[in-house]
Image (cartoon, rainbow, N blue to C red; front, side, top):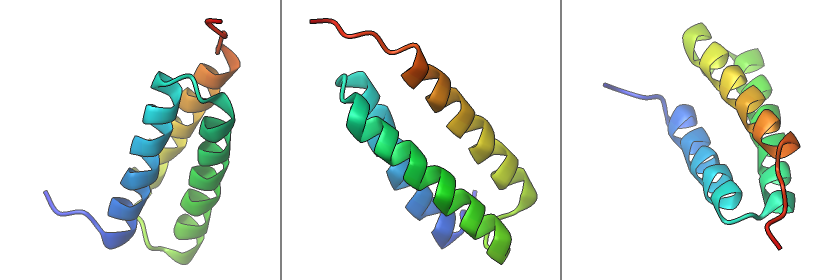
Length: 75
């Protein structure tokens, strides 16, 4: 499967967010989510992503936001 250069760049951000969430770095995860959301909307406006990718990324952002809202400190 081929991916656009923009999608590959967004995947790096997605991996960083997942890593931050798994390591309980809430502030870093929130910053990453905001950046991913802005980058997704920017790429969608410029037509750099397919509509299917945009929908998928928006759902992913919503899932991350839910995860952060349910975030509980373990210490």
